Length: 200
Ligand SMILES: O=P(O)(O)OP(=O)(O)OP(=O)(O)OC[C@H]1O[C@@H](n2cnc3c(O)ncnc32)[C@H](O)[C@@H]1O
Ligand SMILES: [Mg+2]
Image (cartoon, rainbow, N blue to C red; front, side):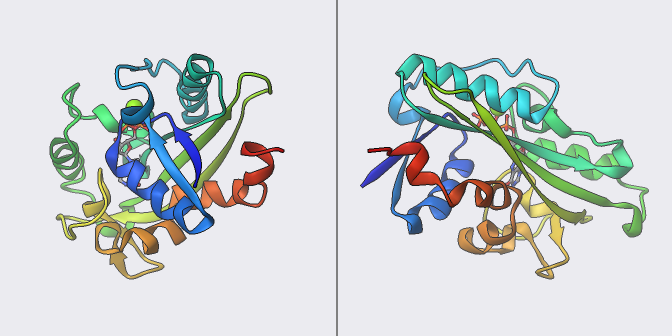
């Protein structure tokens, strides 16, 4: 099977990518498979900058083409926070539970019509020989007042998707991929995957 390497430590993201790439005939490898110890500092000020940092570091290390994803949740009532700090919003321990708790508390007195938010995903593609590039996908939603659903990861249990009339964590991985920020970013790449990764 053709393999695509993703520079991520996040198992939830890896699962999303497996559902997106699997049907196209690709197997996913992550940092756990190819460079367990690699931890790139996310010092950029945008999703794109951070995705480029992660993809370029691993592409240089492995001398092959690599994808990275930098993503997060932008909440309008919080001026776009947690944004690029989504993974560590409640502290360096990177706890999904604590992050959701913090968001729910900050929105305690915010009415439903003002709880609009979006997931954002920047995907970077880097290789040793070509200029790296990025693409962005988004997914609009509303922050609920309590958790619901068992699927997904991160903020999925508090993110209501009006288009599906369900929480993100109530969707299957396949359903999520069809409407998610990650799926929408990848759609821009999918048409020329083979050209990019497996040029004869
Ligand atoms: O950097 P890597 O190793 O890829 O893993 P990470 O979890 O640190 O990833 P990011 O730096 O891109 O931070 C993304 C955070 O945004 C949130 N997030 C991103 N995509 C999400 C999704 O599809 N569903 C729920 N939360 C998501 C979640 O808290 C992630 O930890
Ligand atoms: Mg990260």
